[in-house]
Length: 386
Image 1 (cartoon, rainbow, N blue to C red):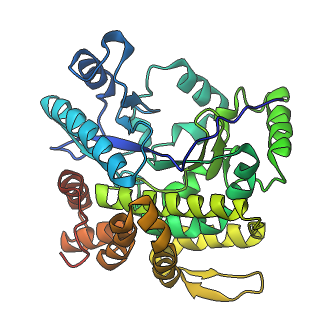
Image 2 (image 1 turned 90 degrees about the vertical axis):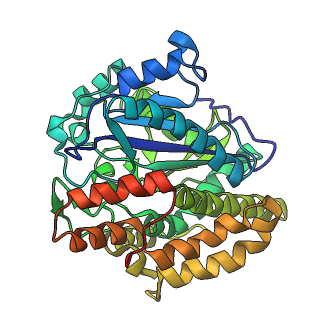
């Protein structure tokens, strides 16, 4: 199978943000995507029956995905998202709904949710059954442009070492169906149950990727390569590496932090290949164990930093990454957003802030929803002690 890769001329950036539609009274996830998107399509930013270029359906009728165009800088991507979210929020408000984002909804039962009216979602439910019906989960995807096809697989392999960093920083799904799971990211465990989701297979090169995709298609495991939902995957059409590991993030500040980390890492790796450097290929079992530790403990995880069992706090590794990548960030114009990683660590990741909100409310998880609604509205985290 020949899979052309649309190489990017620079380390471009794109972000996808899955938003939850919430009834402000009950705090439950509530269907509303179809009428809201129809109203947006008919408005100034829409294209009539063609829809809205930056707001789309997702699996559930209680979800709207907002996307950026092709951006050069993180600040540009944040402004792009903010403009679309403002449009969606205004229309949602007229329908009595608020917007928030978290890896899972704290209280809503997935059995109460309607599926979006798109045949591909109906096919997914038919094929995956219970695994797909419980996909009441929400994430942030970051696309970073890669300048040559032969660089893509080495970058995907090398980036897998940073899966625990992205997951710990973004973890926002401690609750599932009204109960505390004990995890920082329940979403990551729900999603990886799909047969073509989870950790990326470590491949040798683009040719092996093409052979693997051909095997999956010819065996009818998938219909198209879009159905391979790895935590990090190549996106041939966009000419990007797509990081799908992050839980849903409540604030633009956090969106900027993970986008800056992704753009800086990919840009540095791209340049290292140009200089003849062979990117490291982490051991699969180390990546798997570190992902679990980040899903379980979040920013308190002790991750393995070599194949011999040496461990280090992930928050210390994140602090060192900020220092190490700052020269790259200066060149890319995202020093402020990269530094916001430290602000998130100080304020607490979303899973920590959600649990703090529940404690302040005596265990009432509706207060967690209220905090998430507030954070989406202000664009900044509410500190654990706030």
